[in-house]
Picture 1: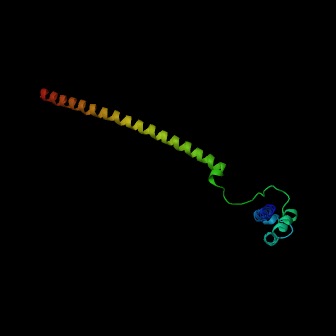
Picture 2 (picture 1 turned 180 degrees about the vertical axis):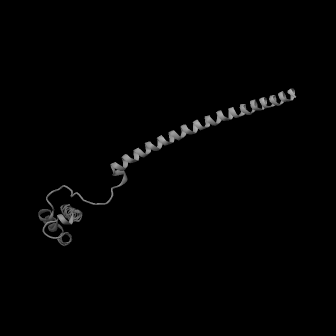
Picture 3 (picture 1 turned 90 degrees about the horizontal axis):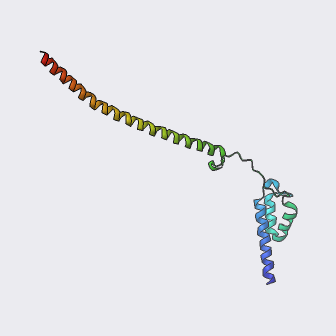
Length: 138
């Protein structure tokens, strides 16, 4: 049982040390270069991991801030989200105004049709009355 525990501990220390070397920024490694640390880890599994943790590993545990000049994702950009909300509100307002304008146009058309129906009838009636009136006058 003790042998199994020792083998598992060796494997855990080896894997943890190797993963830590791989995840570390190459500019922060101490002593030798990052590829050399990986070789040391593979050649000397436990001793390489112990040397890495004592000598090669950077002391500050805070992750290095990367100064990438790539654009951030739209859902992470506060300016994009703010502009998206403004555009959504403006689109909603434009849709509301268009709906109101369409309703007003429909009411005006309905009123014009009602006037148009009454207008020619009354015009025909007055016209036929005028014609009848002129016939009568003649």
